Amino acid sequence: MSTGLAQAPKVPGWTHVYSGKVRELYVPTVPEDGDGDGDPQLTPERHVLVVATDRISAYDHVLATPIPDKGRVLTQLSLWWFEQLADIENHVVSTVVPEEVAGRAMICRNLTMFPIECIARGYLTGSGLEEYRRSGTVCSLPLPAGLTDGSRLETPLYTPSAKAEVGEHDENITFEQTVEAVGFDVADRIRELTLRVYGTAELIARERGIILADTKVEFGLDVHDGTITLADEVLTPDSSRFWDAAAWEPGRPQPSFDKQFVRDWLTSPASGWDRASDTPPPALPDVVVAATRDRYVEAYERLTGRSF
View (cartoon, rainbow, N blue to C red):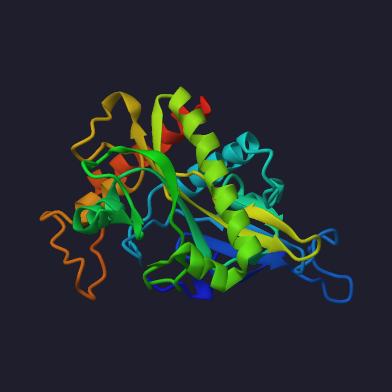
């Protein structure tokens, strides 16, 4: 799927500047000669409108089939988590946004983003499990013998990766490589913050009967005050693995509330898709779309205690 600028919806008072896998970014429109509908309190240098679409990505592909209401779920759940993580600086400025994107957008500080995907893993699964079975490590970090799919790790791991362009694969990197990319002080700080986010969220989720197996967060620098700031989405079904604690059983794949359901269908015989090929994934059938939406909504409602 192309992510060209022409596909982004028009938002009064805002100029589209970037399309990501799931999000569209806008900066305030600068009025000409005092005219226009831009807010003089907002400036392109300091502010950005982050709009979550209903697009879904898997295996570094943006799928052709959207998931209804997904953008709203991601935005509202992120906002709820930012409230729970109030002791960590985040990028949200306001949720008062144009009607065209109400419920799926937030006005944020325009940060200089670090080129690092910050990942915390508290359970063994996914690509980490594949590596562990080969070498007894996860992202080159040694783990004890005898672990299996879904095993809880004694201590959560920090496993960063280098951000890739849309359509490319993120690359796992070591902490030392992170230091080379952003310097020791920043690398150490974002590692500490990532593990703090995971530790706090894991306890909150567990109280609600949900296991947070792993999560990915991102940070940026506010160049105006030098603050390292939690940004983008946080602890959503797009960026995290959520499992039903009552159904958790190490030794097998765990039922999840995230987009693993889509990944599983894509790699099943039913899809007919070869992940190793250059062919884009097929369209999702209606039953997969509906079931995926249900999982996103259930994650939101069980975590927040609110009705979507």
